[in-house]
Image 1 (cartoon, rainbow, N blue to C red):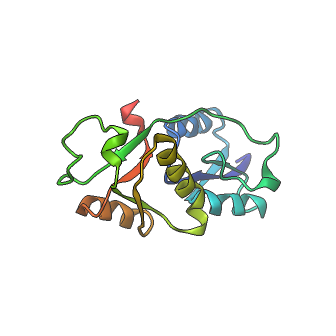
Image 2 (image 1 turned 90 degrees about the horizontal axis):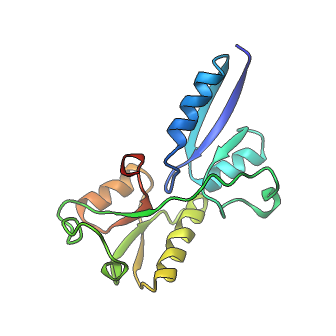
Length: 163
């Protein structure tokens, strides 16, 4: 083994090419052990600052000001999608228009380390001119379960399968 790289990968809004980058890294550097840590971008920036991870793939705009340096690399942007439960009124509509989200309950993390994602959702809604109700949901599978139950919808980036 040549070495180890500890990489943080942000959950919430993500980049569709992450899997390809990880696969290429493994193929071109077979002697390097790659360890992944998934979490909120805020948590990962903290881990990077304190040397617990070596790099991270995460949402721009979430990095602390003292870490905004030339060490960042813009990897591109992702389209937003609306996640709904099967019984939700928007589930069968196909394309969702911004106006369809007016007054909708939208699940966010409401967690200090997920604040970058929450801010991105709020900024997107403001940019679209949509007034929605941001509701706190527990992280990860709990947020997904709330959406599946129809307690609201979630906004995220498009999964790789949709590209």
